[in-house]
Image (cartoon, rainbow, N blue to C red):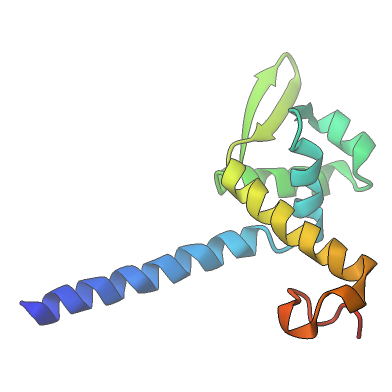
Length: 124
């Protein structure tokens, strides 16, 4: 019986890592981070996002779709426009925390000891 409980716990631990890696994969492109940043404060249409983010409409739509399918964004139709908003505030908080820390490291590389940096490439 104890072996079954141990095996179940191990399977659950593996699944946690798989799901975390899946989320990090979704968030692993600069374009998707820029999209999340643009949507942090308010919902926007695809055309509004295109004005803010320099890319093509097909490229933006591909990234928006992936973020939507992953549950990070939500969308609704308003006439012919598709309006996107943040669905997962936790994902945005995670991105904001990481990006803020890296910005601090870039602004003042000597203020953050190498052992405490998120990005070892900053200041090198």
